[in-house]
Image: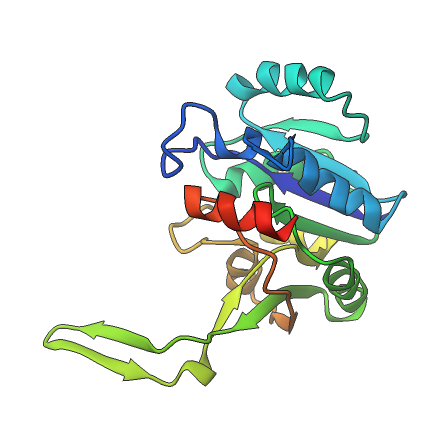
Length: 220
């Protein structure tokens, strides 16, 4: 059995809106609904776990009624950090489960089906997989006496879903939290397991600003 944990804990501060960004509509439907629909389109059998702050759950349920949203999912409470939110989502996966579990940003509604499939299938053998895209702009590193250019071919931009063997991610998430846990790959890496990179898709943007909303409308 495979799972996807969709983490949606944003407050929308950079969006300049009182409504959290995951609930803002693109193409007439909230971002978060489009994200869940994309994973349901990938697989009717995939078990979807949605992690939301408790304070946002009542509003989410209202939206589901308003938009007649009927994608099945299991709800988990958000935590103090993303790490703790993922822990709460993982608690909904049986401790003896065998398969692959993905973790995805709720405000990334455009992962391609091909990328999702590649992440899951590669994780069956490699155990820890993340989608990445090349850096296309020049990158400079800030140093004490100024800055200097670094070779962009040595860097990649990281996306989600990040996919893992279920038992590996559960074991890695039993580690004590530290500030170096910027994503789930960093948690698994700290546990001692290497990360495999696969090609992502450039449309798989993370919606965090009003500009991103405009881009999302065009992508739709």
